[in-house]
Length: 358
Image 1 (cartoon, one colour):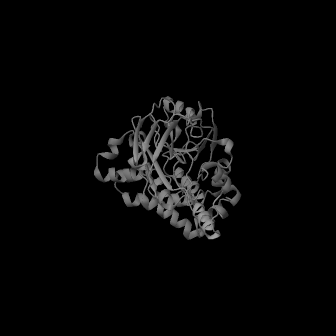
Image 2 (image 1 turned 90 degrees about the vertical axis):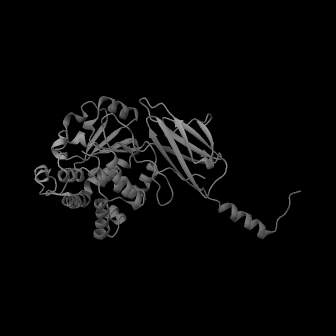
Image 3 (image 1 turned 60 degrees about the horizontal axis):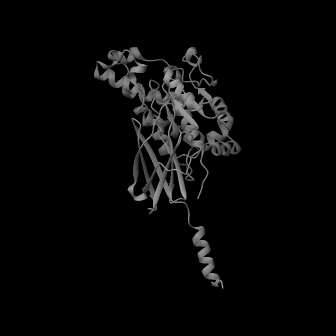
């Protein structure tokens, strides 16, 4: 005979069960020469095991044979995966119940720099951006044949190039069987000149560069609403994915566009700033400055040129603050200027965020 519980007890049990939510699980993947270190944290702390699965497709995992099964309180696991013209993604399943997908954010290339994945950021609703859908990069004109083959292996269908018409190298896409869309973002006409002579003569110093970048990139943000509207039209069509967005260095115009995309997905300011600054670890100065000795033989000149090729926190915070000051908030800017309606925004989230699974 079924035991009868008083109504108050049943009510308590019901609400206790409903109150159980998926724990906050954060996972990162670091790669060094094919050796991956996968780290995780759970809040509240969990007991039990985590099973790790590998795939070259972030949307499909064979969960019958785990790569490893580890005690959760270990906090990390080192694994080896053969990259070869394919990319490894990892699915972690905690206690056969909660799953998280991860991958390496920065993707090593032979010659192409600043190539990385938008996956793995968490938004205000604790939803994670999907891996293997949206990438950002420096100009693909720098890609070696091996880099092009690897991008093809990623399944990239669409390239959005923010380079100005005079920055584009026509031969860049001669051998790319992709949908190439050029959105030549307008820059401040007073900030687009390369100030090589002024840097060498020391008329321009590090602080001048930072102020110039603030003025230029805030101009890019505020004077390209039509191009950004087109960008979101492309991003809200799932048939266009995977997508790469790029510009000459992959840090300036692409950095502004990335800030808009992450904002639209509900990613917080701290992560947007972190994403912007990541370029500093990835840009190879020698690729963009063949005669580096000319600029790096003098300390003051080197400092200024390094500032020119770097991403600065003072720049991205200035841009975000200017948007809040001029338009009230980033959400208002996206809605009123870029015409990102709530329907388009939800479509973007549907494409680029993993659903909440308990």
